[in-house]
Image (cartoon, rainbow, N blue to C red; front, side, top):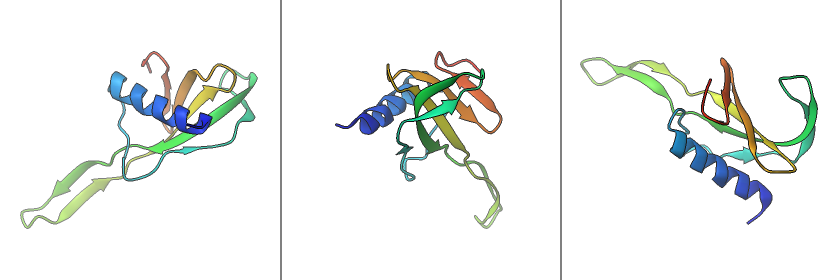
Length: 103
């Protein structure tokens, strides 16, 4: 198993264990090549970034069964330390999820 595949499996296991965010299993996870990125604290670090999409939510139907309201899932980006392969945090469009599961 490659490093990228290991990180994707590690992230999936973390998501299932913490149960605070979902992922859309019909859309594949994507792990980018390791690169130097500026982290949210302003430091630069070599990281792997894994992108995934959350499940769509809030689907409402009318009496005929037609969809009348639908909120599409969002893309999220998990940052992993390239040296230790530990999850640093997950970036969402409305904030961050820490590795311990806190927001």
